[in-house]
Image (cartoon, rainbow, N blue to C red; front, side, top):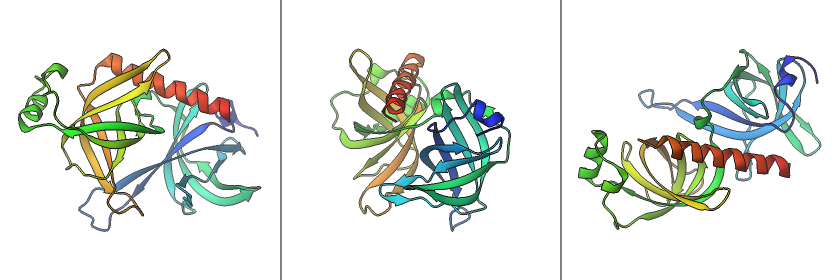
Length: 244
């Protein structure tokens, strides 16, 4: 294990592999998928092995020659680069992707965009028309949202300081403004968050008919609440590293 890369990235460090899947209909926006896994070994200054990511029990076999964006969650910070799959391998029980860095390793400054995989219960509803109009004009505050309206249950599958992704047995339209309510286990107590977010993407969950995945971006989130979410993510990441 040699080279400049190993000064920043170590085996066991968590990584996000971001890949873009083109739609059959060229007029539709491409689908961005994020696969989470970890570094198996650093082979040289520009070559690494990562454990092949999985979705449920299915291995994600990225094609040789394909290019992806990668974010490393290292102890010294978060780093981003462009990588190319050059080979696949198997060592013991680990299926591996061999990847070459094809761009410089850059420090990732936007911590709030790192997404943490989880399974958290959430309650949500679409804002009423008058609420949504007020949000679009940026004249609404949290206390002005209509109280006591019914909420629907869903499960958050990843979260960041910039938004979240959830799965539900109901669907919201693209562009909808949602009220999202969930709890995070902070250091001293559970805290309830009630945040507004816009639906950026909706897809039916593969192999689960009737379930839908929604990607949501926060709207008018308070700076302190954003920092609390980021702290929660870092705390949970540290727990995972200790377990590994």
